[in-house]
Image (cartoon, rainbow, N blue to C red; front, top):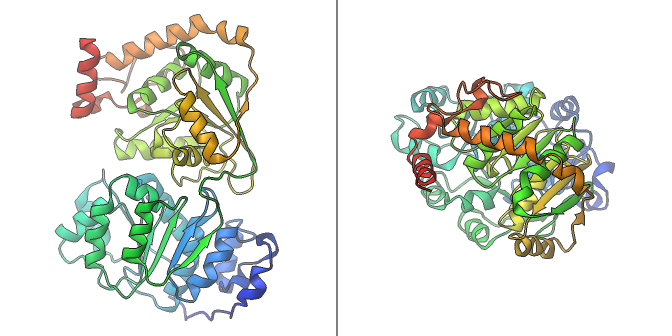
Length: 456
């Protein structure tokens, strides 16, 4: 590691009077070498959350950061940590906890990209991967550990020689989601075995009672940085709804995908089974769709995400596993196939588009059974969604083709061996690994669902 960098003193009062676009990273106290790293990653000016939190973090304060999704939270905690690591290089300097495996990998990529000037080494420790391989990665003593709480707790209990006794920074990213997923008890156990003398950053899109409780348990005299209201979306996002009978849902989706052809699109569904079925149906209709959900093996989840990011598939059909924190640069459209169960989930889903100042579009499907849900979301957003204009006659013209594709998708899901290497019956259905995973039928929950279907 190079010699320690000097941190310019920050005039907080003068800084508060400037807009983010009038500010540079150097003015926040970021060193010259890290400013160059930001420039290479095309971070020209700090975002609001970065401008408000980085100077306090460099002063050694604990941070509660509340900001809407897509606002640059990862760099807001990564930059101060890397700068302090440069001053004081050591193994297991910081631990970042994230709610999903995909987000953990993305955070690690950001750390490695920003910290490339000093050779920052990261290890990602998440479920669904081999414990022994992870134990070997931990034995190499990385600077930054990015993890999901459950797997970190497993290693703290079972991996010989591994501890976080020297930890200087703890970050809880998407804290509201961490607690929604019932990671609370695991986090409590982790807090008991890491040093009390540390800096803690807690970042979240919303401040729930659970997050407030976690804050009291783990932070010391924190600075609260809030750059978003409780429920808010970015101004560059156009938000629409479509109202129609439930039985025509797939027809409307196919009509929209034809209308929006060429756009990079994420379709959010409620269940893993729907995700798989819709992806197969769309491929049978000639769309380059790929599924992403929690019942896929981790390698397939990452593979699906990478194909979508690279543009080899331009439609990602996903459960809420893809709704938190993932920064996929060029998502043009988000379709809520199922209305989210809460306003918080809605914000995170639509936040996959219109990121970093770009524009984007969200379309939410509303059937006769979803009216109350969408009204609740509109109330929390303090705005009405706009109706999206469609030609109903043109939608209905697709009924026959869509019904046939639905039938094929249902058959493919029932076939022995599932979607892997599945039928060449449908137009556009490929048989590579992303056709996944009814091999995962062995999973008890999925088997139960199939048996119930058969009984019906």
